Image (cartoon, rainbow, N blue to C red; front, side):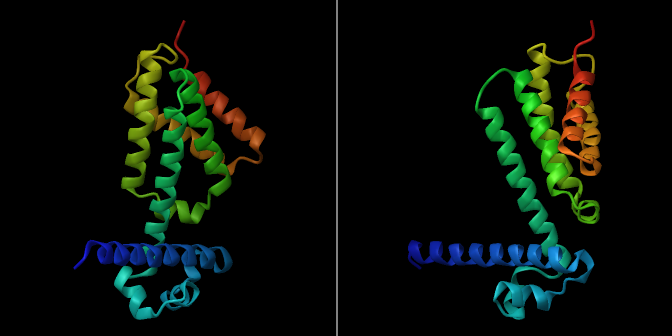
Length: 185
């Protein structure tokens, strides 16, 4: 088969997959997490049920894929912040702030409880550990704890942003987290 044809098929498959994920998001927002069926997803995506089943075995798999896509986008955004330059302390502050705001704006406690599987947490941990390691090496944060421990602490602390009553409360939460990371005198 010519290479162009393979690329066209792959592009089509990617577009169908994205349409399925987007359709599921619409339905969850309209009907709730537990009320979405495969038939509804197929109809909303504009595809047949048989086609849908070629991509996903059930609604849970669709929602997991959708959540993974969101997390990948989140991590790409955070990586862009760190790649933009600046000192490690400011990068850490920006990353924690963005993470907290995203948690605040895009949380759905039922969805998060189901979707935040170990792979998602591990990708976040590794990313945050790297930022923390650079911040510690630069002297911006404490060095008496391993980056793995600090990353776990930060991610757990910032989950409180999902229940924060306002952006101002989220900002205070981030500041509290940053203050706890400062080097000891």
